[in-house]
Image (tube, rainbow, N blue to C red):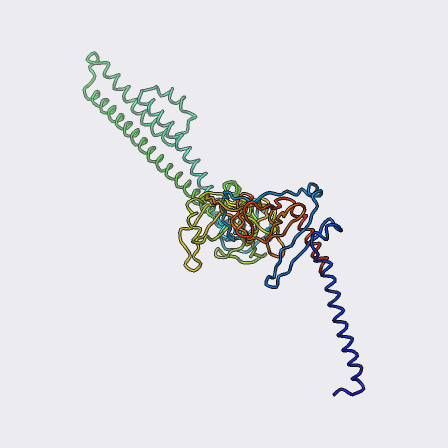
Length: 501
């Protein structure tokens, strides 16, 4: 409870507070009268002035400005009437930047082993075939050794086949000369240094016997009745000749058959050796080895490194994830790296039902993509897919476009505004986009009232297209509007508003 002694001070404080309140109201009234004066009163004191009228039923009131005409040229201020005209409509959607799924590699090792080295780093830009990691794999070592052994076997088989082919050719020529009854001395000289194996001895031995018996028989036959050769001797010589001829013919046929069989066996052996080499090389090619690497397989020079399995970049790109460390044991079912080519990206957007008529006209069309991070730049993307199925929950159809991203400005995961082309045109009330001003979330223009007088007019916008925007509310046809240089009026308006606060 307050004491009686304090009451006179309390009454005095109340009277002072009341007086202070009255003085404050008077000061505010004077300030309001000084600031919210009419344009006619202010024009004699300042080159730029502003007036406002209050309305108890409206939260926002129109503002009027005075800007002398002699300043218009310096400010590049232009005025034009509001007109009706055709506007090529556009549809704006919210989209998202995605990785180009056709240029993303989830890298798994194709063999099991221990990580020998890692040269890839998160965020690193790599080129095609750059070495990313090396895995020490017994599987790879075994496969390379099998290839090396198969190549050695093929080399031996090819040498044998070449030798057999040479023997076959030489023996065939020898048989022909023997059948042509070439003298034995000439045959011996001609085929002395030509390899034929045991065929030479067999053929020459049989031919020599036949040649001798044939000469003997011809000698006896030439004698005839003059010498009265005994019939028994004649018959015996004839039989010997026929036997030696049959033996020689049998030897020729047997050797020819043996040569053919040996050639078939040699050819088959060579083909089998080539097949083993091809299988061994294919097994390594499946693991990613290229022919140049396979040519270097040699345990004598490579030693234990023959078991090294390199992981290389499949294309130019950026390392997005790295799940591998030194000496770690990896398997073919483990993803160790993720690589993406960010030179192109996908743009994803959802079309609503009212936009479905556009689908037939969007195939392979270019669209504009914008992001707040780059307000002065439009990106272009080419549509390559417009979904055929509508999502049950969102009632939208997915759209995909591909955009060039050589400068890396479009980041996967970034939200963007997607502007779709619409071939339809509408007759609407319109202004250039440059005429539109914005403050505190409201769109407005400056209407020319005559002479040096302007009025801020809040408006609602409609469709946009080709630098033109529809005025849905706030203006009438033929009203004069500042279409260029309105920024200077906006600056003066903001300066006056801040000065009046």
